[in-house]
Length: 222
Ligand code: IYR
Image 1 (cartoon, rainbow, N blue to C red):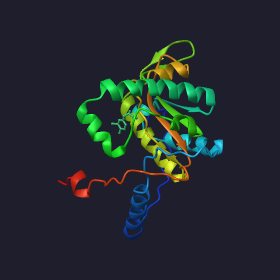
Image 2: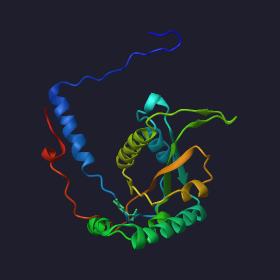
Image 3: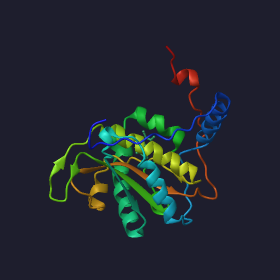
Image 4: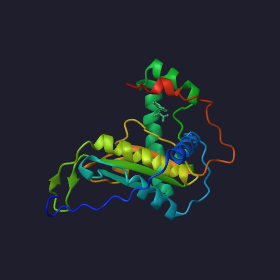
């Protein structure tokens, strides 16, 4: 062990195969219930739940443990409106001019369009920002590593935590989404990564009847 860089013992939980098989089945079945949702309820959610969801996301592994992310939470209706207006402007352009015919065709099963009213209905918008580098208060820059992969991992944890709390989210990536840095006045080292409306599902909540790929299609053994 190198001086000045202490290690602590890892507190392991060892399960026998029987219990492990049961736990892994239950976890898969529970994750399989998660769906991306576009119909949100405005019903309030305690702030503490969102804090815990972000804490859980921030346990994700990251390059050299730099945790190159900031989770911004928007509740202010005026800011939500600004975000909706800017997102819809970009999305209108995307759907009408920027997306290929194949892309539009691929989105037909999801029935999406440029209208994004959920950005004002959901009680919380979580905007994940990726740090391209760390920035000290005195302006000194420090490297981060594998920031895209790290933020992707943190967002996976975030979605699992949202599902575990009994809430729903939509992984929304309005493109381009630089307006989010402007509206939220983020520092120069942060770039928007993902925009997630989070809340309860609406009383009447519809999701597309999608099938997931079979295990054999998504795995290969050697
Ligand atoms: N960003 C657009 C379009 C869109 C793109 C993909 I790839 C999706 O999986 C879903 C939507 C929108 O949010 O409508």
